[in-house]
Image (cartoon, rainbow, N blue to C red; front, side, top):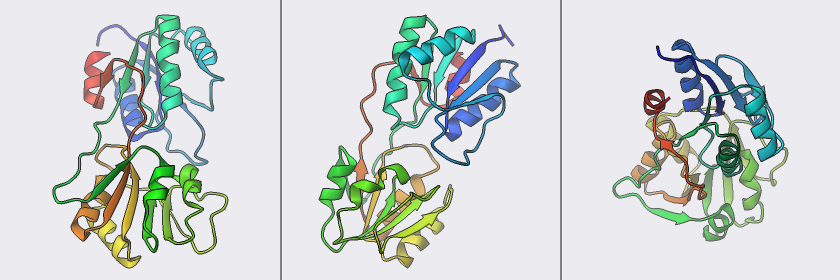
Amino acid sequence: MGERKRILILGGTGEARALASNLIALGHEVTSSLAGRTRAPQLPPGPVRMGGFGGVDGLAAYMQEGGFTHLVDATHPFAAQISGNAVIASAKTGIPLLRLEREVWLKPESANWLEVPTMEVAAESLPAGARVLLTIGRQEVGAFFGRADCQFVARVIESPETVPEGWKLIAVRGPFSLEDEIGLMRRHGITHLVSKNSGGDAGFAKLEAAAALGIEVLMVRRPKLPDAPTASTVEEVLKRI
């Protein structure tokens, strides 16, 4: 191993956990930071910090006070605020940043996708009478509460505090196989799937299932992030640190 490094990982994803495990195995000091939005998160090995930093200045101060030599942003592709803060904090402190960003999902052959910029546009784009599977997490289901003319199945890791009467909640953590996804969509007579373009292997089966069943996908595009040095896999990050 080369020089021992002290690395702060902005995490919460499977890739972040795998990265922490690999870096610790290589002898580096690793602290992982989680936003704390999930009540029972899957924790990475090593020290874990929970909660926000209080903006750019708080993140920069934490990085300097902790003596970190590297910052890795391995947050969810839709966690735009912390990713933006990481770019600014890196510039302020001089601590190098590397973003671990999954490749976007590409439409399977014969799939029917409508790409939309926001959850609100996705909700507006649903036809009356649609039977909709939401796989967008609990924090953004509110965008669909006004569509009383549709039926909704929301699959979430943790249930939201409230949903409209008649909604079906499925609180379960993936990953799910293609057979699982086809079975779920058939059981509930799903006509439309709403998904964020999160990328990665773990969630792709739902898109294959939708394509196989002729279900329309409303795919919410990722937010635009500020430029930063970027790797697409854990292996690439390990080579570059």
